[in-house]
Every structure is written in structure tokens, then in C-alpha cells.
Amino acid sequence: MRSSELLKKMLEGDRPALARMISLIENRSADLLPLMAEVHKRSGQAHVVGVTGPPGSGKSTLVDQLIAAFRKEEKKVGVIAIDPSSPFSGGAILGDRIRMQSHAGDDGVFIRSLGSRGSHGGLSKATREVVRLLDAAGMDVVLVETVGVGQTELDIMEIAQTTIVLLTPESGDAIQTMKAGILEIANIFVVNKSDRPGGERLRQELLAMMEMGAQKDSWKVPVLLTQAVKGAGLPELVQSLERHRSHWIKTNDQKWQQKRAEEELREIVVDELVKKADFSIKKGANPYQRAQEILAKLSRIF
Image (cartoon, rainbow, N blue to C red):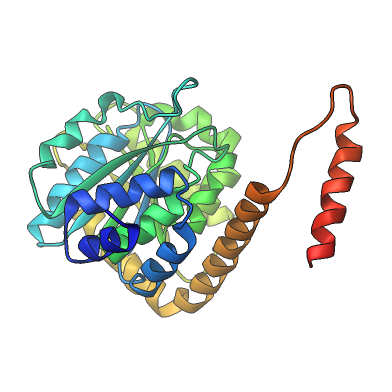
């Protein structure tokens, strides 16, 4: 099936076509640019939510509960689960995300695992484009679950409108080493597994950290307590997501869209130039000298 026909079927709601379109993105199809140009025209409506946090904090369980909550509101939900890639195949390792497959039979839910393929920020290179694809396919909410949390996880801000940072009571010591990063990332803090000792103490520490730090805008970052396995605290989280969505539309929409467009343009151009450049080098040659030769050729194009 031609790519243009595949896109047409995807826009008509065909789920197998959507899955195949994502594969075209992952495999960097030759006609990806014109396809994504069409996708871009039809995107921009979904609420994109990033979910990040240390391993073992319960991200997949929380995402599973959020899917159920949004489906009760009859919202269509797309999920992108970023997994550490196999060093041999580049494929995604699903791990405990199998629990999310309980929604696999629901036509209002689409779940796809993407390999991080060595991306330093924990986000697959294809993530931004797949988000656009799910948006164009009619998803009301797109949840992006990342590999972990830390300074290198800041790239989630370039994709998500709302970012949830998930921690556990045991995260208290760890947040001291990464507090600058998570303060910049978080629109909503969630202390999961809050029935464990130290849950309320961590909540108070986070509130104190935010009091001392500079606020990005007028949004006051909530710190919520949850027990995702039991669904405890989920209604408050969904309400906070809706409030932040409204706040974001009022304050950041145009500015964020412009920044996002600039980042996308940069990635697109760099990818295309890399594909066209000749990186061959003779045995024993100087790579810095070879780089100068390649850049000199590119400079003549511009």
C-alpha cells in the first residue's frame, strides 16, 4: 500500500494503518517529509502529557490508571512508552508495561512502545513525530512515558504540554542531586506509593523546594499523594491535569508552538543533511580534517 493511501486510512480511524505509519517513522521512510507535512496540518488538538520518574516509581501503573480515567470521560487516549533499546536490534523492551495491554481491546486506546535507541534524554528520536501522528489520528490525550528522570530528561519539555514527575517516599535523598532538573521539568509532582513511610515528608520537602525556587509562570505546581495500584489520588491528578491544560492554553500556547516548530525544523534539517552527507573516511585519516571537508561542501549549498 502506498504511503499516501496509508495516511488516508489512518486519518479515517484505521488502527493497523496507524501502526504502520509509526513503523514508517521509526524506519525513516524515504517519503517521510511529505507525509509528516500532511500530518502536521491535521494536528495540534491533543493534550500531550509527559510522565517521568525514577525506575520503580510506578510510572506504568499510573499511566494504566490514567488511561482508565480518561476513557471514563470518553476521551481517546494514545500512549507512547519509551523503553531502553536492545543494544543488538534497537527494539523496545516492554518489561512490566504488559499491564497496559489490558486496554488493548479498546478502540479508544492506542499503545505503542518505542525504543530509546540510545537517546541521551530518554526520548526516542521518533517520539515527537509519533506524538503528532497520534494527535492527527484523533487522540484527545497523548501520554508519553519516559525511561527515567534526571538532568538529561529535560527534552520532555519540548514535547509535552504538561509534565508529571513521579517520585516515591524513597526518592528523598535522590531529589537533592537532581532538584534543579526536576523543578524545571515538573508541572505536577506526584508522590506515588505514598502509604510508605516518608510520603508526607517528601511532599513537604518538594513544596519547600518550590517556595525557594523561581516559578516559571503563574502556575503553582501541585504536589499530590497517590497509590496508583489502588487508584488512590487519581481523581485529584486528573483534575490537576485539566487545570494545567487550561492554564497552558491561556499562557503558553503560541509561545510553546513557536518553540516547538523551531526545534522540529532544526531536527528535520539536521536529519536530512546527515542522510545526504558522505561520512566515509580513509584508514588512518584525520576525522577533524574530514569534518572540515564535509562542512565546506555543505556551506557551498547554503
